[in-house]
Image 1 (cartoon, rainbow over the protein chains, first blue to last red):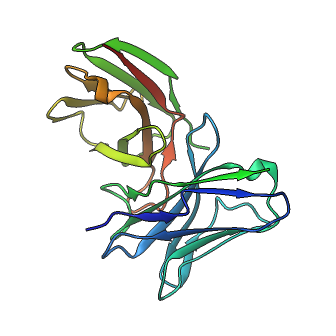
Image 2 (cartoon, each protein chain N blue to C red; image 1 turned 180 degrees about the vertical axis):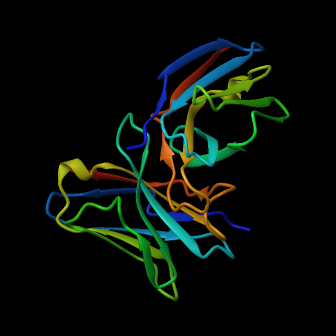
Length: 114
Length: 112
C-alpha cells in the first residue's frame, strides 16, 4: 500500500514561471491537505480538499496560489508567477476522514525559485 | 491565533532519555500530536493524545499532557542515533478540524 506520493521531489523555477505540485493520496483516502514549510519553520496549513471540492482554503495566499482535487487524478497545487519567497517545502497529507488520528504525509516537494 | 512553541535544539547521549517539550495556547485543543521529520523526508506521525487524557505510553515513547499549564512533552527512552531528527508538536482545536497547528520543531541530536 503506497503512501502519499508527491512529485516532483525537487522543483526549480525562475521568477515569473509557474509551479505545479502533484499529490496522490493513499489508497482509500478522500481528504487531501496542503502545508507549506518555510526554512527553519514549522508547517503552515494552506488548503483542505475533498474530491472536486475545496473545503477550507483559509491558509492560501489570496493571489497566485490555487489548488484542485479532481474526480480522477492527483491533487494539484499551482503557483503562478513564482517569487523568491515561494521557495519552501510543500507537503501534502491525506486521511480517510477528517483529522483525529492524524494525517499521513508525503515526502514533500522542495520548490526553489531562482 | 493559535501558538505552539517548542525549544529549537536538544542534544542527548545515546542510551539516555530525551524529553521534548511543547506549549500551546488554545485551551480548546482536542488532539495533540507528535511528528518526526528526518532530513529530506516528510512527517511521520509518532503518537497522539486526546485532550482528556494525561498520559499515553507506546513502547519507548511516553506522552504527558498537562492541560492546566497547556504543556505537552514527549519522552523517548533509551534514545538511539536513529532518533536524531526534528520533532514537531501539533494541535487540532476542534473535533474533525481540517487543519493542524504546528510548532517550529525541536532538532534532536543523539551523540554516540
